[in-house]
Image (cartoon, rainbow, N blue to C red; front, top):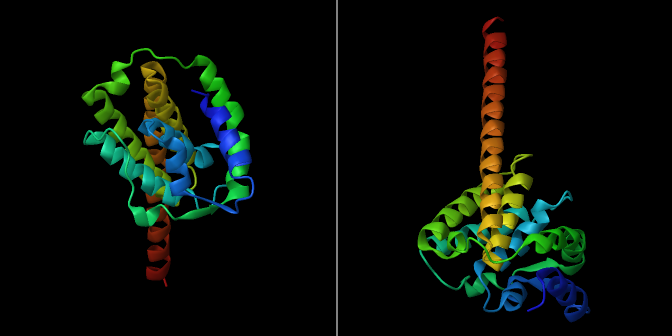
Length: 209
């Protein structure tokens, strides 16, 4: 089977050459019989790159949250509602993300090989991975700067491990997920405390009149 980077280049730049949009159905077709990891990598890619991805974090985050839930309950193949599969995204924008992401995927491919496979294949391992990806997907959907990129990177790396049954890479992805959770938590705390200080200042100003 061809490497993921090569498949993405062929699919988006040759097979869909004349297309104006790409749909979730197209992505599911590309994934075929492969594991959840393929979809996690592809759906996390736009938000994991240092490029603006308006309009992608929330819908892709929702899809990955649903897929993560299926991973937790033990499904072997991913499923999405048929009504969602027609959702289209501008092909030019998607190609921009794929073009920027392929060099990074190739770097991971050099390191990836089946090892510690029980991390990716055992029921316990898949539950842990599913819960981590679910939490990172929720973080991606929150419209606060700083809560998207690191969680998406964690999902991408963890998903790549799932794709190749490489438990070591998935464990590295889980570490990034923990870092993403810590960063998101810190942002929430700072934002909450900042908002509280501002509200208190306004109340004091009003009462002082």
